[in-house]
Image (cartoon, rainbow, N blue to C red; front, side, top):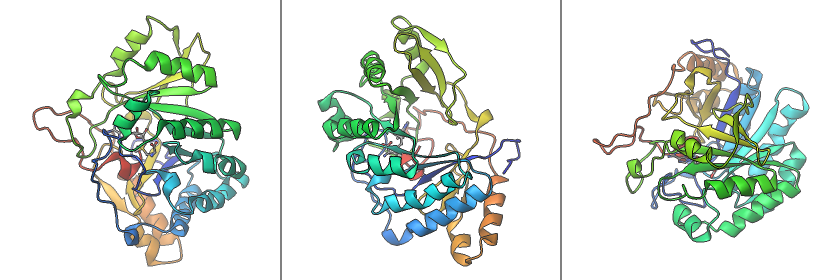
Length: 329
Ligand code: SAM
C-alpha cells in the first residue's frame, strides 16, 4: 500500500477496546461513556481485518486500546495473529499497555511470539501515580514490568511529559530504565479529547527537556528506529536509548508509515485529522475480502500529508474531539 505522498503503509495500530482500568487525567475524563458492546468488533472480526492488512503489506501490528489486556479473551486474538509471524508475513506483533495485567499475560504473550512491549509509566512515585491515573496502583504496574522482563520480553517505557507533574523525575526514570535494561521514550501531550482541566498547563516542550537532560547525561543522536515516530539518542551513562516523540515541536509526518484502526472498525489515516473510513460495513457485507480490500485501498488513497496539532489557549478546545483511547495513540 502506497499513499498519495509515496509513503509505504506497513504499520497498523489496532485499538481492541475503548475501555481502560485507569483514567489518566490527560487522556480520559473521569466519567467516560464507553461504547456499547454491540458496536465493538468481535475478536474474530478484528483478526479478519488485521489479516487483510497483512495481506496488503502491513509488517508490524501493534495492539492497543483503551487497555488492550482488559478485553476479554484478547489472548486468543494474539494467538491467531501469531500465525502471521510463523508464516513470515509479519515482522512484529506487539502491544502498548499500562502494564497492570502483565503479571497474568506476559508469559503467554512471549510464547505466542511477542518480543517487545511498550509500557506507559509517567512516574515512579506511588501517590503521583495514583493522582495521574486516578485509579491505578503503581505496584501492580511494576510487577507487570518485572513479569514481562522475566518472560524475556523487551520493555520500552513510554512517559508523557507533564509540566509541573513529572518533569522533576526524568533523571530518575533514565536511571531506573538503565538499571533494568529498558529504553525510555518521552512523549509530548497532544490535544486530543475533552478532559477535565487545561492542557496548556500540562504542555512541556521536549526541546526544553532535552536541553535540561544534557546537563547531566551524555546524549548522542542515533539513527535507531523502532518503526514509530520517536527520534532516539543514546544515553552514554546507561547505554540505553532515549526517545522523543514531539508532535507539537516537530512534525513527524513526512516518514509516517502507519494507520490506526479503532475497535469499531473505523480507520484513521492520521492521528491528528478527523477524516476516517468505516471498514466495519464492508467487513460485514461479505465473507469475501474483496469489498474490504477495496475499502482499505480507497482509505489509503486519502491519507493526508500530515497533521497540525496546536494547543489552543484562546478557544480552550482540544484540537480533536476524540480521546486518545479511541485510537490508542
Ligand atoms: N492503555 C494503554 C497504555 O496505557 O499504554 C494503551 C492506550 S494509551 C491511550 C497509549 C498511550 O497514549 C499512553 O502512553 C498514554 O500515556 C498516551 N496518551 C494518552 N493521551 C495522550 C495525550 N493527550 N497526549 C499524549 N499521549 C497521550
